Amino acid sequence: MTTPAPWLSGPEVEAGFLYARVEPVADILPFIAPHFAGRVGDRPWMIHDLQRRQAALYDLASWRLVRDIELAAEPDLTASEHDYAALWQRYFQLHAIPERHNPKLLQQHVPLRYRKHLTEFGSTPPEVTSR
Image (spheres, rainbow, N blue to C red):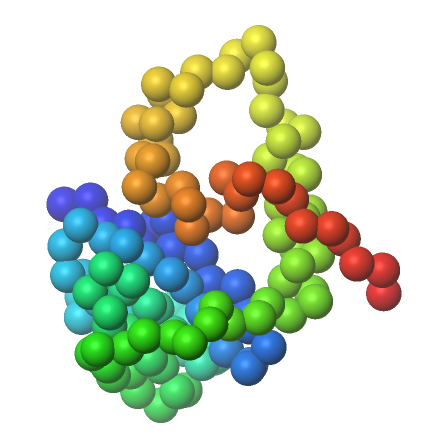
């Protein structure tokens, strides 16, 4: 079974936790949340299933599933996350070899439905801020 867990990307938001948006085909939050609690158990996080309006929340002790959740606004990313996103997009662009561009193969490896939430497929890279 293929799950979107490999495509999950969670940047840090100003509120102090990692936030990942997903739109999986199946209702998988109850299955992937324990994995992320073990793997990223040193930081609070939220995995938000936009289709089902539910989220898995982790508070450093345990995770829980919250249903009927709707955010008033997208959480603001930290300044360092904006910098990392710009760097990652630039890295992704610079390592692409135009002569070897193969959209069909890319679509097999990264299906279109996952791309809108992945940094490297962003439409325009955010500006790198000076520190």
